[in-house]
Image (cartoon, helix red, strand yellow):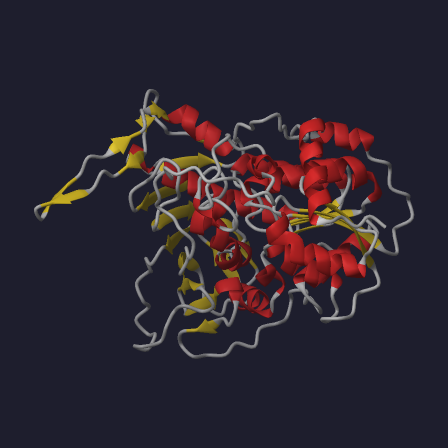
Length: 505
């Protein structure tokens, strides 16, 4: 048994941080033992980042109810950078799995346990989703990764290709993908119930965490329970302030993707799936003041997607998809009664068809037609009998050759998340004052003028004296827009971290 007291955990974590050299995914892959040809009857799982959403994922994977476990999974290791935030989860699961080892740096856990594991759950801050998942995939492990799948376009493409090469079971944590609402929305649209769709509008009531902030002036003392270096991971170094962690990370460009990256993975998934979307061809973004370090308080992004192959009962023409957040909302469809809220569990998507209008809530929940009709379309989508997490376990335990993919397998979640992450790029490039043209296959904007520059605000400098407002805005130095765009698409990793190479087609 490998129980650890709080003191011994911190001591071990500190020593590991100092002594353990960061190992690239390629080395881990070479080190990992080959899995036996016979599929496992009990899935051995590692959990990384388990104090927040990771806790809910663990419960979905392991717990039949509050006291009873599923018998086809075993937890062998847990890692979280914050002992205080994760301690309750660690204590809970070590009671069920007394041999489960605890770490405050996933690198140390991977070095010791990855070759013994079959699967990895990733619930870390957004900026480490890619590195945690990529190293596991490169080692041939099944992966469940919370949304957004990654912070950037390139990272999503990488996970898509690594998963395909490894032939493993994967799932992004947009749990609505396994819900009845998404199934119904797809079936209604594919059956021609609302006709051809050329416009979709979507919104969320997020953020409910701080955004639009300046760099914090204060430097706080790092809590003894927090491995700050492990939290920073591949991001640029910065001093600790409690505004970054826990949970508020997604409001900062270095660590997250704001309300768009967080909630579009829930709200826009029915759009992506039902309309057979792929790469958009154009995008434009606008927002409240664009800050250098923090995501804007509110934003709008409009994508243009080209026509796709027709379905048997409905055509798929060019479609514009517009996203709103931070209190911004699309215009109300005329037939929706006054007083009826469009907000369903945190937002909605509105599909404008030539025959009718369909509304789906956050997670695709509670879809309805504005006309009031109740379609009875053929049920052609696979239903998930238990939950999003257990469906991943099911796929992990199935033979590779006959495996039925999960409802948000990386083959779908990867391209979908690329769309979301590209929209974040459009927000950060809005200073170009143009519609951006996107080459999805090659992951680049094609019409940024040579020599164009962009900048962002550092401080707004707003003051009032004797009732008179004044502004003394401070801006970053202008940077080359093409170079900046390239780094938004494929991020530069810091502090010795390195992604595995992109597999060659």
